[in-house]
Length: 382
Ligand SMILES: [Zn+2]
Image 1 (cartoon, helix red, strand yellow):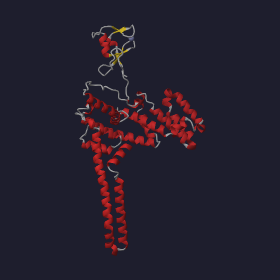
Image 2: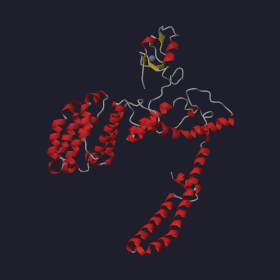
Image 3: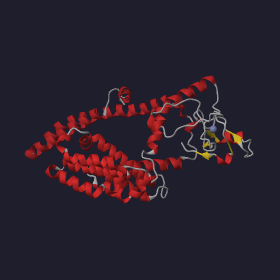
Image 4: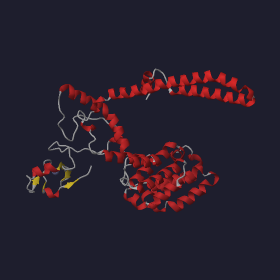
């Protein structure tokens, strides 16, 4: 960011918006002072206006000069950007081709705006990009609910989130989610540590009424929490106290809530547009370099579905494991998935078919003495 600001500064010869704003402010002050003078002594109107004129003229001129520099600078900056990233030409840059995916990209932008809570902008964008109907209107209501619950969590109010989770207990359970219990636990600790003199009683009542359905799964944790009731005074430096007082632990419960909320809508927790743009930005220099090398060596890119180099991305952008068949050394794909054969070894589907010579007959595992039929192999999901 610093570099961009410096570059903008260089291109605009130091002209900036605040200089113009200062000049305009000075003009306003002159005008206000003139008004006061005239109000106090109407006979001085003409002489006051006469002395006012040169000051105003100079002020406006200075403000205009400064803006001129700025406009010129922004123009130059645009050109500088084009020059810097000239390889976005679709012919040289196969991944840059938009083709007929524009409606999909518009939809992604619309979804991103909704997920960021920019509802008014989303509405306007939907009208201007003619997206009516492509994003279900119920999603907006859902996201409004998400934002209102996130807001209450930021204020350390847990009830709206707890109500939401209680209504969806079965679905959360089927996703093996701990969210509802974590929310109850936090509410219990909030009562205990921040409930003042009656805090212990409130926490006890709360645990009696809410922990019951969780006894089977979380008994050791509930036991520890019950212990906290007795030792509240000496727990001020315990991890439980930090759970209530630390902002980062509240942020992680907000994140966990957002993930579950989006999962219920069958959406990822992060906006796909944000992930694609961020990963793309990280990967861009590598692609740029490849494009330069390709041009210098006059080579063509022939592989259809793979890139000829590694793009180092941070761990949070890695979504699934990759399986390489130990026999064919091929990376598995949707059409050639990894299969587990009865002995427990895993091979690519194509390899299994090759071993059975495409006839479905019995074949021997390449890694152990067991043999089996291809139809006994089960697809596995990594
Ligand atoms: Zn085997």
